[in-house]
Image (cartoon, rainbow over all chains, first blue to last red):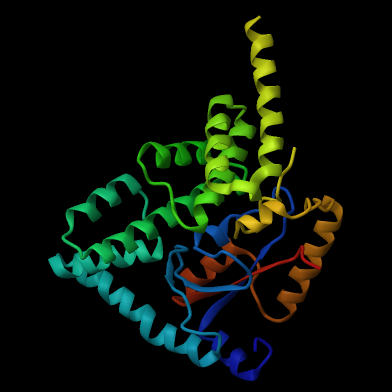
Length: 228
Length: 73
């Protein structure tokens, strides 16, 4: 599809960016896919000049890309403008859209704001799940980019604030938590991760748990030496 | 220590039961990256995120981003 004239015509209307995940140590922006909510390859998205996610394409065709650019992106920008004008209804709709698109900086405040809205239970749950997903994406992205300290802080805030994601991200959460604990040489957190992985992973995580236990034993030995 | 490459997506528990994914050596990864960058650039894609943002700011256009990878066979 990318090699067609039709797609060539479409790229004249946008800045076509190929973001390449490389696994090369030190390459910049390697956490970008996760930051924009991508979980696999290929992922497509529309961003603005500030790098904000504005929309995901409606489908995998040039027609769908164009419809997203011509309708969904302007609709979001119009919603943003209406919210900025102070209209209460527009502000709420914009806030919920921001959650969907991951435009959240202060997650604790976002949860509080969400709880204050009188939403249908199913909608509220969906939005809480989206928030948890984005917060975990950011933490994973921090970790993948080598910002272990930032990842540790974010993950711990999620644990302390009872904001651990559910579904398939639950296991992923504790996996990343365990890896950050190992890299931070934090025996207490590693113990907590092992306990959680044993509970949520079952047999699937047996091998990982064995290796984490070895790491924990090493960490404890080192701590004992330091104390002794 | 068992470690999955950090750049792969953690999509499911089945992954934990898979054989260790050997980290390819950096030299090979750099070679693959350079080849991918060259191929995508030749097709008209911008491959630098900062540059794309600058271009978007200057032109008023949106960025259409295609996330891909260079390390897979």
